[in-house]
Length: 409
Image (cartoon, rainbow, N blue to C red; front, side):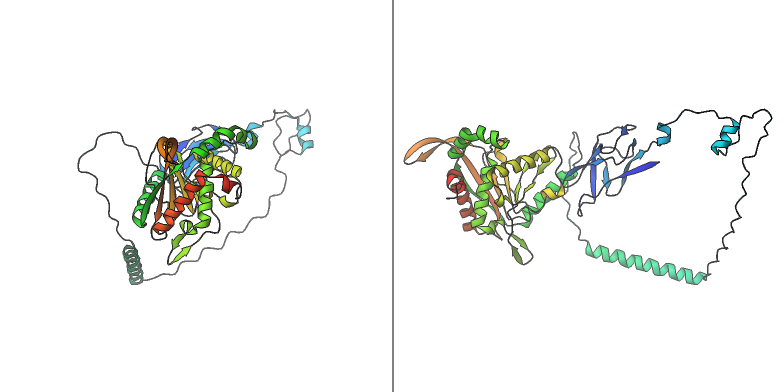
């Protein structure tokens, strides 16, 4: 008996995906719970697991596009009778009769007559079903009239659908033939491209900049990093300080975390912050839930867990939905300054950058300090320039003097 393995549903808005790779090979025996393959969708990458034991027969190749519910492989189950065979035992005629076996005995004792195994009475004959009723007859004219009516209804439905669908302008490729290797875009890369274009066209985005002196945070990590890791089992990074800074700034200027829905401005009840994570499949933004309720070490642990899930491809659809504000760190790649793009329907995103030692004026003197440029991109439909600049100044003040907030002062 074969069991079909189908592309599962991973979200209401996701109808198809890309078969990334087969973890198990053709003809390989699998056990319940074994990961069979990876499915890449426009939002997440997930694995399909075997529910039963059997031999895997692959029906769809790697890199193929598959739809929800499509059969991609089959598991050929192995009958237990075949795996657990008992040794055959030769019985005499008397032993077979005593055991109640209905097979014809192959052995006869001297002086014993063979008995027919078909001694039981046959069951009563089952009556045949009633004959099928003849279908009602229609004239040729009636059949043609019905056929014409169906054609008219189909044509009307096609016209209605065509009127609802607005043709999209396609970007024409260059006229020259570009020679080189070609690689198909993954669903998640296609979705990223669409989202970036939607954010650029569909929002009144504007970016404001500031710089922050990271001396205090660098010294905190240097002096207390080992003790922090020994106590909480997680390294003390930079991102947790920025999460705390954003939480405090959103409490004072909630418009930055609001969003437009129709003719209304919606303010969030919880501060769910998106943390951008770079993976080999693209940029993923898992969400740290209720950041305003977390203690400092819980924030650091939550960030580490989300980053690990993203890089291992174990992020679920629930992990990336519902953020109210996003933080992205281009500094890990060496970026000195950039303008991040808003993650719709959010209204703001904070960009971190590389920490560089630069000469700055401190109390009338020139000193070398670890400095970082900050960039806040915001939707001008929701946030005014004064609010955006004030928001970024609050973040700067927290990062340069975090002790007052962390100590509840």
